[in-house]
Image (cartoon, rainbow, N blue to C red; front, side):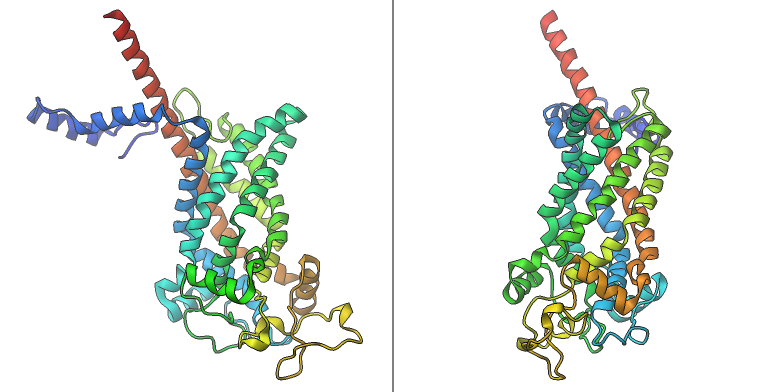
Length: 402
């Protein structure tokens, strides 16, 4: 239903409804009846459920809008981990830049390729934003009572909410990253992902059978390091929103003004700052998530286990299972620190910002879609609850007067 800024129907809908009532004055208006029922129903929704409901809806909207950009970003981040040797960098890069990568994916895999991983993305956004915004909404007041400091309370609330949502949803994001990093066509080059999953459940089944339960928590450490992202983004967003609009997150002015331009500006600035500062952890997380943990000698998917920095414990010891060319079969990436060292040595510092342009191009619209949807739904539910409460109060007063 189209509404104006105050949640009221626009003039065209009002005119159409008026014409309908004039032609059939004895029939009730179904839209009005539905709205009344909706207002009364909204008063029964506990306030604790409003934030997760709005957050889950906002996350789903964001995922649908930005999935193609997320696919491009994931391929750019992950491709350096699939090559066969440390020197095959420049010649082995399949994806270059936003437009070049987009054209290549479209040419090889079509529209389906641009929406790889959409299922787990939506499945992941539901609990991610539901848990995050629900915990943040409660935790910020708790920490403010404990610390008495506005910035500290928001920072602690962001980290707490982010940790809860990350631990709960990490397996889903590993599956999503695996699906997005693969090519739909058969792999014929050493820089492509060495697996083929048919879908979410197929990926989960194969990962569990070949790599075990631990594979679902690959990249958890850099993901937790990424809590610095939300520790910057959400306090900064709330501060900027209060500066621009006079209201905190999920809150709106009682005079009916929504200040959508202010919300958009606050989201844009906070996301740009947080993404630029904390981007390298995303590359570390993606590399760890896209590295298989199975024994390469039992599978043709040995590419991700070859090369990398030599480990100190390799000295004087047998390399164990080796590939056909004698290289020791061990993971290229092992822990956050060693992964950082390996990428820095093999690809240079610029690899930590691989795909950052695409990431910003994706992350900013995603954040704006998420926050605008969240704030809009909070506003609409708040208006419905307020109208429903007034209606119940009027009915009670009318019943007492009889």
